[in-house]
Image 1 (tube, rainbow, N blue to C red):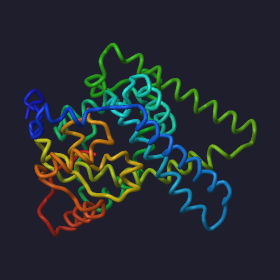
Image 2 (cartoon, rainbow, N blue to C red):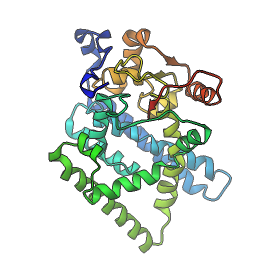
Image 3 (cartoon, rainbow, N blue to C red):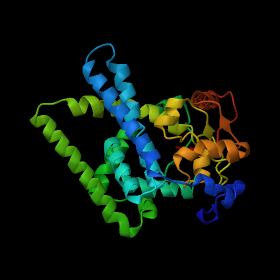
Length: 316
């Protein structure tokens, strides 16, 4: 289907009048949530430093890394300008989160808008990948083995002002220099931290930030993979995106993004209103609500092992 025909379907399940009650934004809710998220990272990071090279090191480092990786969520909310009422606060928190997780904020903004506009489109969705063809491809993706090479390449190319044809399609021409400059500032900051670490002979940044960040990325991959994998390749928002029930910790650190169909239907609704929107208006209309994260991965693995019909392609 041509991109011009990829008009969203299903957004009329909630009327504009009824939707207004879920659209109210404020600074307090987002700030409290963000500060608790950061405080958790600092607290677990302190515990990690205090328990260095003990039996607790790996589990604590994984927990630290998962919480850091999940800063993708506030950055994502700030990309939509829905985390806070104030535009400037969305930009500040979004860029702080972006620096910590090493993903450029402005670049993600334009890439993510294309993902929302062309969700599940075979060519228009820049975040769409094929459903894994076999177990090795599934493990390769969940393990995040390809993510770091892609992120390093992306930061390098952006800082050098190199953009692919696909990137030039979703980044406005007038914003290319701004995207490149943001990447240069990030690379410069990382180099400064590296030089300072060498100068002071400190392993602090590596031990409580970089290594946990790498170790925790698979937790984010596992959650993000459930959002579209195996869903329909169509512009129908009720069928191309999955909402998944999760526990409190996942909902908190992922800023309610497991309510992903609700988010794609109404991306301007702030994260704290998504559970209520799901319960009161949207849930009954969705084609699939998964009972858990593990149930979605079980479904994927079941298909891969040939116990179910061939899968659709997916976006992550």
